Amino acid sequence: MMETAVLTEGLSVRLHNPVADPEPADWAALRRRAGLRANWAWPVMRAGVRSGADPLLLAVLSDVEGPVGLVAASVVPPRRRDVSGRWPRLGYLHVQAPQSSALPGWWLAPSTVDDRRDVVRAFRRAARRALGPGVAGVLWRQLGDDDQAWLPRPRYARRTEPLAVLDAPASVDAWLAGLRKKRRSNLRHVRKLVAADPDLQVRTGPVGDVVTPAELAHLARLNLAKHPGGGGPRSGHRSPLWQESVAFRDDVHAVAYRDSAGLLLGAGTILDHPTWPMWLSWGALPVDEGGRRHLYFDLFWRLVDRVVEGRAAGMVLGKGMPDLKADLGARLVPQHAAVTL
Image 1 (cartoon, rainbow, N blue to C red):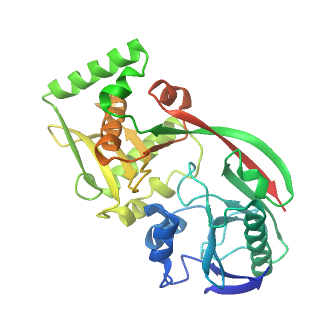
Image 2: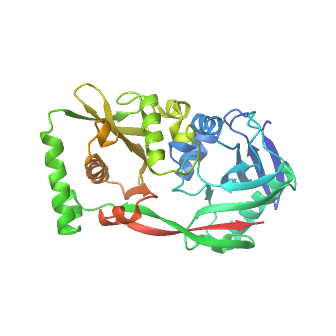
Image 3: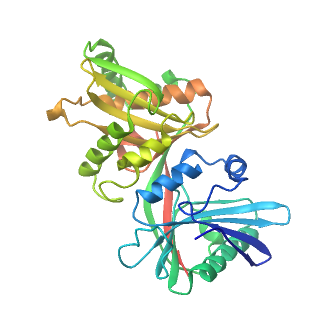
């Protein structure tokens, strides 16, 4: 299905299917304006849909002056999807950032609650016109405490796992000083272990330079085995296709740990951003397969280094293991999910 244009609520709504539609001429500029990371780049979204479970509907809403809203929603059918990637005629919309369970799947330019509500209502009406009445509701995730005010007719809402963010410390020493004494001591011990390990090499750089897409996909599948849920064994980050789509991008970086024989022991990926870079993923070999127990904590130290040196406002650390991240200095931001009609 090619790009669809709908006029509703005085707004023009362009509906795109990233698998079937070419990248719009204004997409890169809109992505920069909205402050969206590499997971919203057109070829990266396309790879995510092709390796994922559900097709993606991308709505760009504009008034006479230009874009005022953007919504990404997986179109979830009641049964297994058509492998063509076409939008199904039955199911529901799942609004979530492409390949990220940590960030919202929307950008809204208006600042007032009423104007935001109008944009969201226009999105829902345009989607229903394009998809038909069989696509019944909208599931919104990553809602902050203030976001529910602009949701139209919420029918169900609940608190979900919090989002961990690291506010930029004045220095690495200032970050360490704010931690528990035992945690601080353990981190310093880990740092010494890594520095003194003659069989450990650490490299940072673009995916493709320091680690291959296939290696990252393998580590992501190992991580899924430890923390099941969130897609199939070869969807999204667990797919070499998706990892290939971010390879050699200057806004996606990896930290890779190898032994002296070249075996990848662990790797983390970061989506760059001028003020809030995001820790996207981490995976590591089990200890009984040659892995190291302490690499996660070494990587966390390096993330703090990156924030301080880059003079960022902080880093989005994602969901999962919130208690551990809080113990490492993160702030936990309440999150909610809601269903609307």
